[in-house]
Image (cartoon, rainbow, N blue to C red; front, side):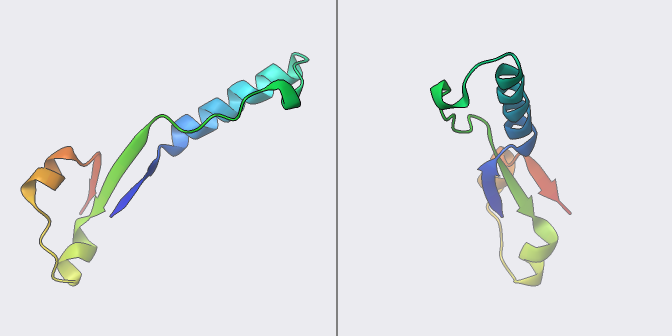
Length: 67
């Protein structure tokens, strides 16, 4: 199971930062942003291998299930 920042969103924000720097903004004046989108990924094959039963409520809120 993994809960973390959405990598696609993080790369998109990095691109926005690069664009701002290329337009002349000083990096020292730019705020440090934290991720705003997070995702929950559950690997069901590994859970079964370890004998872990994942509750249906957790399965319902997962962004991605790996079979």
